[in-house]
Amino acid sequence: MPAIISTDMFENLIAEIAGFFYWLLNIIINSTLRLKIVNEEIIDKIHQQGKQIIFASWHSQFIPAVYYFRHRKMCVMPITSLRGKIITSVARKYGYQIIPYPEFGSPGERIQSTQKMLKTIREGFDMALAVDGPPKPEYHKVNPGVLFFSRKTGYGLVPLGICMKRKITLFWRWDKYEIPLPFSKVVFAFGEPFEVPAELEVAELEKKTSELEEKLNGINQMAKQAL
Image 1 (cartoon, rainbow, N blue to C red):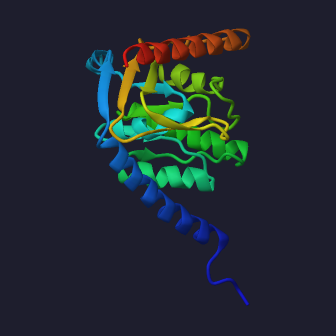
Image 2: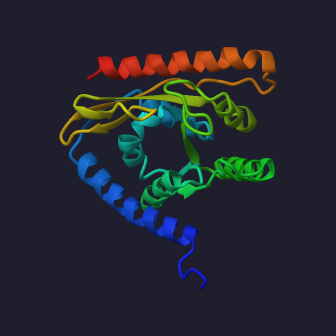
């Protein structure tokens, strides 16, 4: 007897239900937060130059970030897993442009997804990147692949640091996910664009990756000091 509901359909249903409650929780928490923004003029300056922005932040800072960017032309690239589909559900409710990334897809599928993302950025969308995320997640370690987006578009990576005064940290997760408590003070700090050379040599890749990590750690320290 054939299955009435396929595995994909069931997973999509679970993702939509979980995504709805995640989105609702996101709104409830974020609507109470007291925000302080440091160096927000950097965003305006880049846009006035006719350029788009690729925001680079740590994966653990998703909750306040997705809410903060809700009124902007933003695109994200969640992976095609149950977790990624939940993120997709939340981001779509905030009006984000979604380009799924096939974490375990063929090289051709990955290239196609990446090309679609680059096209979307060139059409006037900013992009939010969790630079320590998939396909090889490692806590506060920049995935070298993120430099590709900057190099291909010619747009710098704008470091974004987020510090929450009162929060819950999920220490058992690889990213030590942070959930701000209601009415907490939260600081967003933006750094100057991190430029990636158009002709980045393989030998320079590790060095530039380390430099971006230092920039992100520095901007997060700035956010912490501004609390």
